[in-house]
Length: 396
Image 1 (tube, rainbow, N blue to C red):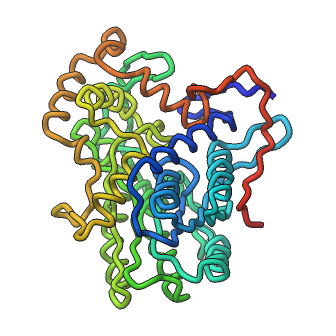
Image 2: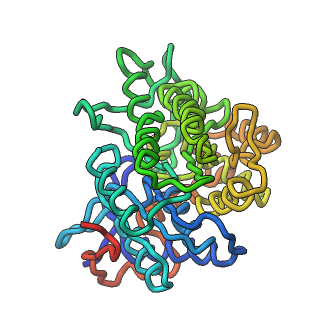
């Protein structure tokens, strides 16, 4: 079939298998161009099919020849209906990994559930015996609690007052004011339950009790802080409370890992175009301006560059550099004073008319469509493509 992008708001409803494969192969080539390392060797990635999770899996496999297990929740293809992009990403990764002699298997299902946790534990025991790294990169708007069956939904809202500022419709380029009402009722509690650290802790507790974590085991969850421009709706909003909980959980997990000299970290990453970030008001305009500044400074990074730097310069350094709150900061280039000063200056000038010249809206749109396998260089979108792609290492 011929597959074209069909969008609804900040979501693309279709995905292109060839474009997704090309994206994955490009990321693999990037990691292959870097020096190899000895660590990690046996890796579990929760949320392994897109964004930072996918980049973490690729970096582990091709940076240190690691065996990887990926857990994700993706929609498979059906006749005449493409799969979700993460399905095609995973298919491409595992196809190439197997071709290159690397162990790569995966489980598709709700990572919050006890069933998927137990299935993953069984696979680790049978195939790897133990793991030395767990990446937690889950981004879901809803969570059904595995013990109570209660369903929680997260919200993106400010706390204490209505938020008003500019954003951009990246499809049309229109800069307009947006207004978001403050959180109420159980909004904060529900968001923390979905996006906080409880599930991360549950994964670690299960795997540790089963004795499948190596000595010196590491686990990393991903977070974001961002600038003052976005803090009312992000870091000081409901999602910020969830991130606070996630970061506090890292210390609790480290305490539980003391007997095996294990460590839990939160890595604060750069603002990038992901399916999750596209949904956050204000962020598309901020990223458009940030991209312009960072590209001009020669310090722009995508997911794979970020994670490669995290692994090589932070996580597996002789001593892991941390900020005063105990976090790894791989957003250091984004948050440079000179970069933020320039973005703030451009923010004041941003209108529908000025944005094409002062921002990088084209870069934003390209990255957005790349997430779904579209607008990828070298791909002929007029060609028939087989939507029915299998994932080689998918477990039943």
